[in-house]
View 1 (cartoon, rainbow, N blue to C red):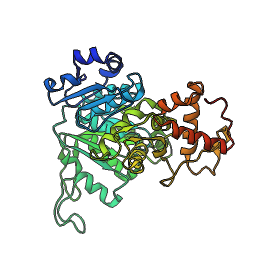
View 2: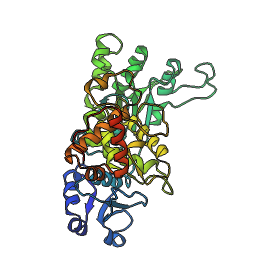
View 3: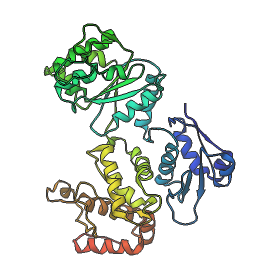
Length: 417
């Protein structure tokens, strides 16, 4: 159940934004109570509140002060996304989402958290599986105990058994003291086994026994030790395929696959892009200098990208944009650079055509993405530059410069006023 409340003042002075927030309010899983209020009520609402104000100027988001949120267009994507990011900032490891797929996944995970059933989380690298695992732990009765994550691919095979199950003094060369192991360290809490498909086949049998019997046998010991651990496993490979090809034990797969949850890649949950980008700006921006908001033009570029690296790539792009923006008030399209070396220069546009998307010579995808975002906005505005510039969050002069570069590149601009 959401711990998000709204005041009557907020609903009265900000009806459009309040209505949009109501659509996801019950699906926001917050670790701490948060109250959303109008700026005039901020002092009376207390510290754990978000003071919301409507700006007269074209300020999409002002993120310079904790607990304050300023917006311009209540129906714009940035208004809701920025408010969700600001709300989530008041929680501890609160998941940030607005896409229906993600919200349904977290709702399912919230129900799962109330049990001790093992969970198997699948999805591509960087999609947020560890965030989901932490959410399951934080929402469970085990939340006051340890959450320990281990990457099964990052530890050498010779050390992984001792790391998981512990060892006795002298059990192997260099073991000058005993070790509890991660299972015993996580006793009463949750153990995340990340990249479980990378675990050696021989060690899988010992893991299976630990899960079946609820006990571990430290290396060099003769008596097992009882443990009470909630297991969450993550895999970015298709485990049934791994089983069929003999790389993963079938019995261990069925032991882990009691409650599978699949987290889709970021490109399949576009509603998460804007709130995640805003949250990353809050997390990484310097409050004393640099950008305090994201422009709609920059957001349009983010929405067009395919995100092969998922949420991890989005965070890289946002951190890069903060560097590129320097002391600018707003992150604009010219600051968004994807998988190309960062450089400070004017971005020239390539002609837009279907074949160019597959052109191996395309060195910077931002050229194509920026041009497409601007052309689509111009079409929506019937070619009116002033209106298009306002929607894109750039000056008319910058838009004129971009259009001139497109004409030089041989693009047919049509009727542009």
